[in-house]
Image (tube, rainbow, N blue to C red; front, side, top):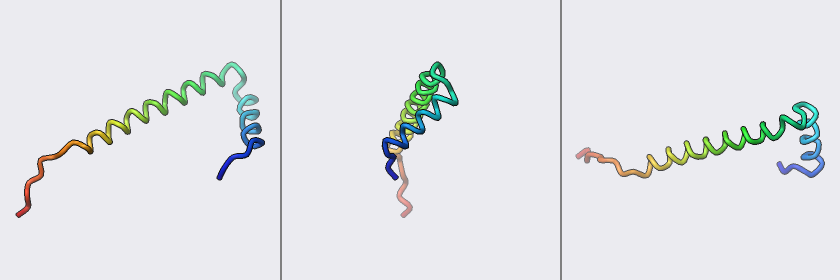
Length: 59
């Protein structure tokens, strides 16, 4: 499922035509911020799982 150089250029060209050169940096920044927030949120969930819980012995 790798992308070839030609596919990447085609996708970038289509994005440039659709959104324009002024809007692309804003979209990239927004996507990066979204991924950073998602990473921080999932890291918080993983940290919560690492905390030991007081479990009662069922016996």
